[in-house]
Every structure is written in C-alpha cells, then in structure tokens.
Length: 112
Image (cartoon, rainbow, N blue to C red; front, side, top):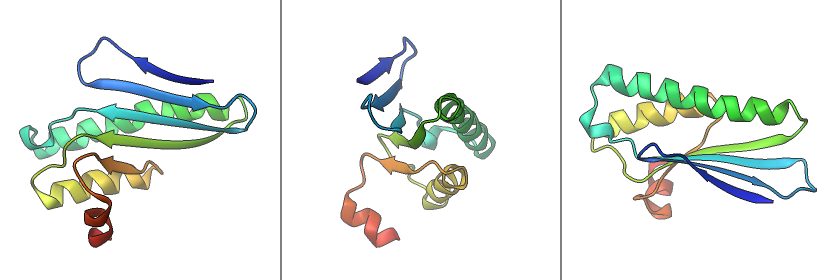
C-alpha cells in the first residue's frame, strides 16, 4: 500500500509508503519553505517544527514495530550556503536526510 496525503495547507505534502508485507516504511515531507525570506531565528524555529512533525510520524510507525526511513524534500536551496548547511545539520542530527530538488546529484557529491 502506498499513499500520498495532501493537506489543505499551502506548500505541504506528506508521503507514506508501506508495502504491507515488509517491516520498512518510508515517511517523507515535501515542504515549500522559502528559506531566503526568513530571519535566522525563524529558520531555526521552522526546522525544529519540521523535525517534530517528522518525528511524530516516525514514532507512530515505531510504535507498530515498523522500521522507518524518513526524509524531507525542499524544492529550492537557500542562496546563503551557511544557512543551507545549518538546515541540513539540524535535520541530519535528528536522522532526517535532506534533498534539495533544485540540486543535481553531481552538485550534491561536490559538496560532500
């Protein structure tokens, strides 16, 4: 069973994938956060809120004995490289990988 759950709030979609026979599920958030318009404190607040939301999904699956592969996707990287690094670090500290839709695999490898 696979599902995409879309809320009525602008810029947000939740993705949940479960193959009904495996212990592994995938949980992803697609967010349209405009990091360039936020203050530094708003960036941190926004990331903390997103972490809490994803961990709520993770814990709900751990409670039913599933293994969870989480992730978050943003359509656009912030212009400020330090801000991008901060966002990635905060999420990755919580075990949540980040994908920037406007970044190629080659660009990502070059940053590693």
